[in-house]
Amino acid sequence: MSDNAAKCTQTISKNLLLLSVLLVESLVIIPSLVFTTLNVFASDENHYKSYHPELSEVVKFHFLLPIFVYQIIWLLSNIVSVVTVHCNTPYFFFFTLIVPCIGLLLSILILIPAIELLIERNFNVSGFYLGFVCGLSVFVVFAILFTITRCSTFRKMMKKQKVVQTTAEKSPDDPVEEAAAPEPIRIKDPDEISISFSRRSTMSMNDELYVPPPRR
Image (cartoon, rainbow, N blue to C red; front, side, top):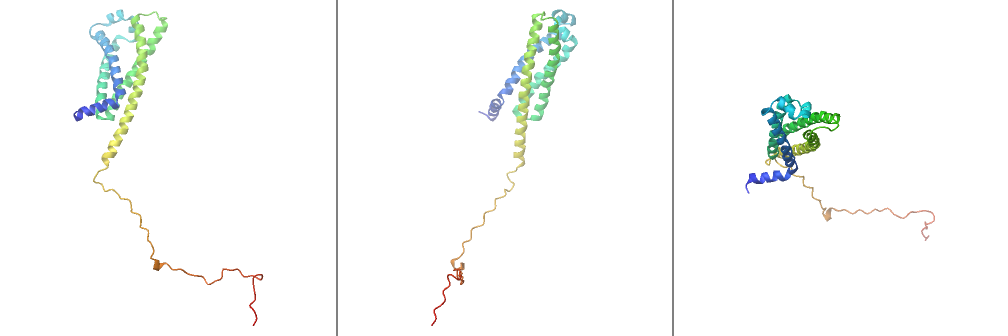
């Protein structure tokens, strides 16, 4: 196995959760991209309103083209995210993190009026619109979890980048300070050892113990 293949395998094993998130997210964006593409380039505003009357009240026809462009940017950011994770470039990954965060905000802004319209109609809407609201609600919940996963990956990449920078700053040619050797214990020569004896008596002298010397 070549070095590149081994590095790719290592990247997949260490970032399996993030790669799964990017895959699921892309699989959700692609059908919505097809829908916006057909309505922008293969129909007009009247056709859009006639086939999707409820949705046209929430998402106006003139908003479809900006949504279409942003969906393409979102897919491209997912591809760039894989490259940045593989190359461990956290600063580029940060820019790819901004794109889905804005997409999550836009999804919430679309979901709120969509739910309000659903409640106003007492759920008396088309099956397509009901499926759209339910699908968008599930997507928003998972998008929040996906954003948390991205933030966790970004934090891990920053820690790894700091470790690499710290290792690179330490040159192998730099002298390593050796610990000072402990001073050897000096054993005195027996001739140097002097023993002094005290001539003072260690016995306490008092009147009870005093015995006068015999008289001659």
